[in-house]
Image (cartoon, rainbow, N blue to C red; front, top):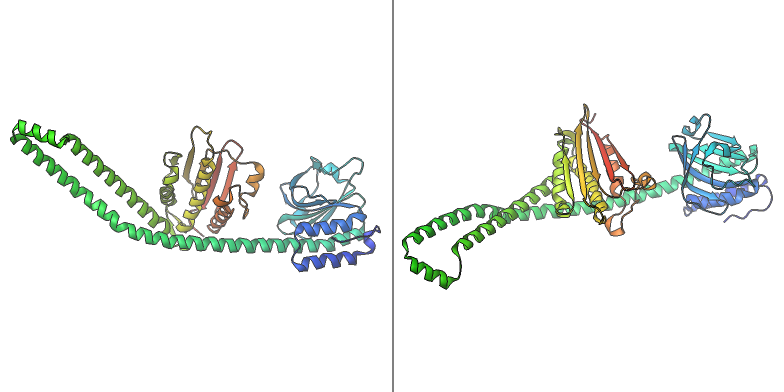
Length: 433
């Protein structure tokens, strides 16, 4: 950590630049570590808190924050009676606010009546990111220039962290893609190998049932011409009721027929799900993709989760069906996971709604689970963010979904409050223009 003397920092800015620059270029310092170094250095100037926030709809969502030597969790500040917030949308524009306490509701937790804040320094970065400095003294011109020059280090550290995050995200997505490719190859092989035995079963049941019908006729003809006392003796020796025997054979054949039909459906579902090139644009019906995905998840939902389908008879749209199937798989799997641990629910259900608009279609996937808090909802599409156990998810599923939907020029949103379930809604154009 940078050591500072009790002298006013304005007289020795070079030392700060050297220390912070060394930390930045070493590549080992996170945004919070850089903020901590700067805050310690700037404290003699009256700067008591530094942070990085994101400006959105008159609200500062502060993610990285250092107050003296404390690191409070992320928090939000609502700006009230604030004139001209437009500057926060223009990179490299700054503003100094005198007596800032009056502009916040609720006031920042670190404002104390015994040491009131005198000034607030705000500097806009890219993508509505804002560098924040709170001071217990007037911010002088020299301190303003120092904050401006030091903010470049903050921006660099933030960019480096974003780059590392993006690099990790890309690596994880490549790993995920390779896993999916391996599963795809295995699936294709399994589907091919299933075809022969499934066809054997399916084609064998019909003639077997026909043979059984002929056997019954033969038996009843014999029954009419054989003396009854001899039949009674045969029944006694065999200890088998012929009617029961025929019924049991019928039941067994029905079971074999149903099993073969189910295996055939799974094989068809696998071919539909993985047989479409992921990166090929073509016209496809999303409802068919939903059905094939549900078929593959049937072992999870059967007898445990009720599936309600409210389809609006969608038309085929221009899309990459393989990619959309991946989105459906992620969203439906998340919904199933949300319901699995809810033992107190009377009915566990997933509802799927599809509707058509003039130039677009909408798909809604809603579960009856416990829902999510506002804090979770705000981070739900962030890479690596997850509320699941490690073995159930990496936190990449929804961020990948977001990227896929963006690549289709569509949008995805989430509606959820605690105890009311969660609904994801996807809107996609019919034609990519």
